[in-house]
Every structure is written in C-alpha cells, then in structure tokens.
Amino acid sequence: MTLQDVLDDIRKRPGTGDVIPIIDPVTEEQLTEFTDCGAAGVDEAVARAKAAFEAEVWSGLPGAERAKVMWRIADLIDEHAAEFAEIDSANTGMMKMQSELVVPTCAEFFRYYAGWCTKINGTAYDVRSTGIAGAGYVDHHAYTLKEPYGVVGLIFPWNGPIFNACAKIAPALAAGCSSLVKPAEETPLSALLLDRLIHEAGVPDGVVNLITGYGHTAGAAISAHPDVEKVAFTGSTEVGKMIVQASTGNLKKVMLELGGKSPVLIFDDADLDKAIFGAAMGIFVHSGQGCVCGSRIFVQRGVYDQVVEGIAGVANFMKYGGPTEEGVMSGPLISAKQLSRVLGYIDEGKRDGVEVVTGGFRLDRKGYFVHPTVLTNVDPATSRLYKEEIFGPVVSIIPFDDEDEAVAMANDTTYGLAATAWTTNVTRAHRIVKRLQAGSVQINCQLVFDHDVPFGGYKQSGWGHEFGKDGLDAYLKQKTVWAQL
Ligand code: NAD
Image (tube, rainbow, N blue to C red):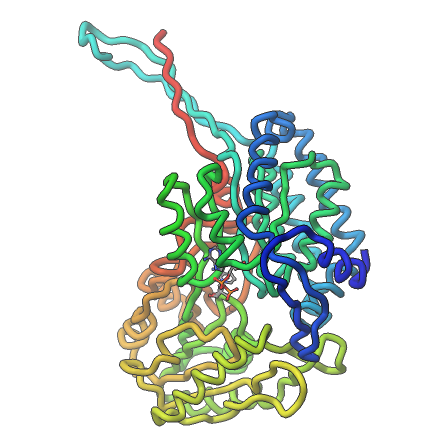
C-alpha cells in the first residue's frame, strides 16, 4: 500500500461529519482529506467490537494461537517498513531516518506482547480461616483470574503515529480485548495501512476497529460510550482530564499517558560534552514534539555559561528541514496551529524580559519550522513558557547553586513525566533519583525506551503504565475466586 493508496483510501472512509484536511507540514499543502466518522461511526464500531468480544472470536483463542497471529503482524510490519516510514514522514514531516528507525520497534511491540499471550495467569492462595460460621477453621482454595476488559478505546496523538498505534494495539490484542483505534486527526494515514495488515495477518473482523475523526467528536464519543470498558489515552493533560470526566457515566477505567515539562539537571561534575549534546538533542530532536523532552534545563552555576553556549551551539548547528532534505536533523512542527502556539509562548516570553540566546523565530521558508530556541533570564515564578508544556523546540536554561535548590526547582511543576540528571557522582545520582518527582528518571542519558520497561507519569502526567508486563495488565481485569474445601 503506497502513500498514494492511503491518500486515496482515507477519502473513501465512511463518515457524516466535517471534512478534515490533512496538511503536509513541510509544504503547507493539502495531502488529502477525509470525513469525520462522528458519534454514529463510533456507535457502529463499538457494536462490532462488542459482538466480536462476546462471540470470543479472538479472546476465546488459545494464547498460542493469538501469539502466532501477532507474530504475523510483526512480520508484515517489517515487510512494509519502507511504506510505513514514507507515510509517517509525509504526514508529520519527520525526517526519513527517524521514521525508518521507529518502524522496527513497532514490529517488536507485537513480538514482545505475543510472548505474553501464553503467560496470562492469576495466583493461587491456600487459605485457612474461620469462615462466617466461626466454628473452627475451614480450608479454602482461592485464586485469581486475569480477564480482558472487553471493548477498549485507544486514543493517541500525532507525534509518533505508527509507534503510538502499535504501543497500544499490541498489548490490547495480547490481552484478548476488542479495540477502537483512534489516531489523531492530523495523522491517521499509517494507521490505515496497519489496520489492513492486522486483518491480513488473521485478526478476525470486529476485533480491531479504526476510528477516523476529530477528538471532540469521535474521541469524545469513545470516552463517553457506555459499552467501552476502558480508555487508554496518550495526549495532553487537558484532554486527559476531559476523558476522565466523560468516563464517569459507566465509570470506565482510564489509563493516561499525558504531557510533561521535564527537568534536566546538569551538575558541574558532569561529562559536559555528553551532557550538552544529550540535553540539546533531548529538546530539539523532532522539534521538541516528544512527551519526555527536557524543556527545563537546570545547570550548576560554575558551568552555566559553558552549558548555555554549548546548547545554543548545537541549536545553531542543527539543520531543520523536510524528510528527504540533505543533512536534516529535525523536521517541522505538525500544524499551523502548533506553530502559532509555540511562537505565541516565545513572544510572550520576550515581552516578559526573557533573553533569547538563539532562535525565537520561524524559519524563512515554507513549512511550520521554528528555529531551535534557547532562553535564559526566565522567571520560574511567573513565566508561562517555563510552567506550561510548549511541545516545540524551546528550552529555558536556569542556574542553580546546590543539589537542594536544583531538586526543588525540578519538582516545582504540576507535571511528573520524566527527569534527567547528568553527573559523574554515582552517589548523588542515586540520591536524587529518589527525590525527583517523575515517573521516569534517566541518569546520564535521555529519550531512552524499551518494550520491556514500564513507562508512566507522576502527578498530572498520567495514570498507570505502558510497556512491559504493566502494559499488558492495563488491559486485564482481575477476578477473585473462592472454593471451600
Ligand atoms: P491532544 O490531547 O490534543 O490529542 C490527543 C488525541 O486525543 C488525539 O487523537 C485527539 O483527536 C484526541 N482528542 C482530542 N480531544 C478529545 C476529547 N475531547 N475526547 C477524546 N479524545 C480527544 O494531544 P496532541 O496535541 O495531539 O499531542 C500532544 C500531547 O500528547 C502533549 O501534551 C504530549 O506531552 C502528549 N504525549 C504524551 C505521551 C506520553 O506517553 N506521556 C506521549 C506522546 C505525547
């Protein structure tokens, strides 16, 4: 399925709502358009998903059979890797090398979770208790069963379209759930190819259902639907809160992977070359459109000037451009809306007296490109750009005197997704790991991930975990069984 095929196919998808354009963020031209499926489309998909779940066409298969199908999906993703990379790069403007690196990790999601299909077990307990009669001890055998939730809604953003889709679909399939797969309205194209391959691999009809539409229509309909048992959402904290509110009708369970304003602490004993490059990449790669991007960098005063200069140097060296342009190290922002949002924060900062060390402007070319931007003289008490998630290539660099001050400033945020410490002092590194209020703390590295390692946010950055066994358990409920012996 070529890029042209998906551009044509999405036009044909049924819908009754608004026509949604898909814009190439590099050329600012329309690639294609599709019709919002709206609440009616969600109702139909939920009915199909529910029927498939109740008929046990997927959840009733032995784990080993589900695993075989999931391995086939992984192989098909690998076979179509070039198409996935081309589609996601065209849709997001992401550099080709980046999308080519991501696709194999997507296939691995299916292989990794295929392994869990045959290991979904509860626990057995031998219990001797008085029971309700109270006349002597009674032996009981108790055990737990892990059961799929049923129909689940999987809603995710545009910043890694195929990655976000696979990270949710693979564990949901392993658990035996039926799902509604709702990509962002800006980037539904690679999900179309994935949907086709999932069915080609042998997943029965009704088990995975692609939903194409806006968040406030289709996404909201999934979140409020009485037959959806759980929503697994990745996106902004603002929308996460809306989903929690929408879920109250049937008290559906909600898993949230939300925004961040992640701190990076650079101590004067750090390997500064590595720290400077790592921290710069940790915010400027993918134009800062990563949930764990380190958008607040705290630097010990003795090395502050050197680090500011170093990070600004990387910012000035990095070439931003389209997926196939020569020597490009990062792509554009996703949309005109995101561009004006990012520039709005920078302009407000300038009015507030923030010092722009480098960047702070839109590139003089077609496309939604903002020059990587380094800001100093930012007031943590009042600055909105310091407190709020920008989701762009914009970083505030702030000096600190000692560890206590650094930790206090790092934790002074409503978010708690990730944090990084650059230091060669191993004792200090492990000491501050315990003090940092973040679901993921990296020592001398940034932007690392593995399928096996759980990931989730503290505070307003999330509920629950993805990846690893925790990621599977997110799609399983637990039943307790008692038998009197
Ligand atoms: P967003 O919250 O606007 O949209 C995400 C998804 O939610 C989209 O599919 C959208 O259509 C849908 N949506 C929007 N309104 C909805 C509603 N009312 N009900 C249900 N669904 C709705 O996020 P975005 O701007 O597309 O993505 C950027 C955000 O995602 C950032 O905040 C970023 O930090 C976050 N993110 C978090 C992680 C993580 O793992 N923690 C990973 C990637 C991105």
